Amino acid sequence: MEAVTLSAKIRDKIKKSLKWYSYPLIYFLVTSLVCAYAWYTRPIPHRAGIKIVFKTISVIPTLIWIGATTLWIVAAVIIVGIAYWLQKRFPQLAIWNKAERVSHGASSDIKAPASLWRRIANASLSVLGILLIVTGLSLAIWISRPYITLLLSTSKIEALENKVKLGRVQGNRIIIPTALVDVPILEGVSIGQLSQGVCHISQSPSPGEGGNCIIEGHNLAEFGWWRPQSFFSMLEVLDKGTPIYIFYGGKKYIYTVKEKNYKSINDPKLYDITLGERLTLITCVSTWSPTIYTNRRTMITAYPQ
Amino acid sequence: MTLTVNTVNNTITGTVSSLSPFSIGYYLGSGSGYATGANTKMIAILALLAISAGLFILRKNKWIKV
Image 1: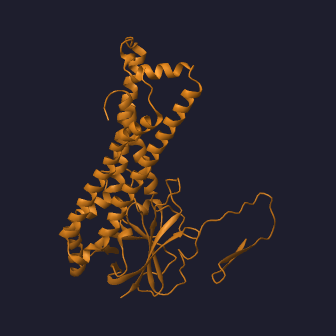
Image 2 (image 1 turned 135 degrees about the vertical axis):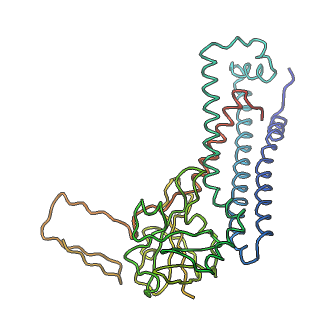
Image 3 (image 1 turned 60 degrees about the vertical axis):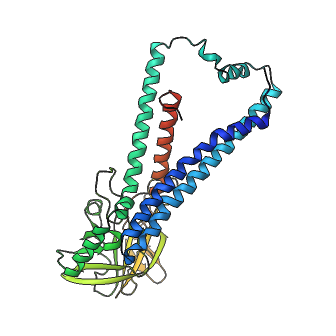
């Protein structure tokens, strides 16, 4: 039997693994095209959030995917190297004979018919595999839906701007056209209220009272790609100068975004009600900590026009 | 028990009339105390892991050839 050198094995492994890079590149191409479509089909003032969305859904995931693929290939090459060294060091081990047979297709000649239990196990594993893929896709659609909605809904932004111009708004409401926010403001925070609208923290002043009016809302709706997106899903796209419209107590208040910060929930500045007149919007921010719930918040500070 | 809130120094001082070995103090946080959503990055990683694991299992079971 012809001996295969280590370098040839590694070359073969890398050659076979290179195709895995095509998937992140295809993903990058598709998401870039969607972002480019959104960029060119909407007026210049509405383009501000597209860059942030492009970075969030296209650039960062592609880089992570390419990095993970590279790590995978490096790990595979190291394993090939270790296996080669072990084979040279301990050639008498039975595992090498089995591996050789498998690699030359000899195992198919001596394959016995699968038992009933074996077939049940295979079927169960297949069902598990399908379930995992469906679950993963559902999660992916769930979290990416707000971004997709924002990219493909140019007309909705214009509709919200018209609504603000006409001023036909009932009840207390916050409208941010560029972030697709059009939601009732509820008084006081509770789990139930947070699922129905954004909540004005009762201890903070109301709009027009001259203090720091604090409003918080969810960044992600309850699980389900079929459910409407959450109220502050796209707060991330707000940039300096973006207008925020508040309809409160029958009056219209216009604020302009000045700052966007990320703070810990324990930071006293996050809910500081002693500050001067401004509007503070708060929602959860994603982090790399391995938890589903996060203790960091996106904090948007806006001042009256 | 009486509480004094000092917003200049960000301190809360409590005074009690008697001591109890069973009293427990804990920090409530400065905000409303409600979670306002979830960590989408971790959910994205979970989604990617689930899809990868599913593809791996189906590939091992000869359902798909990648």
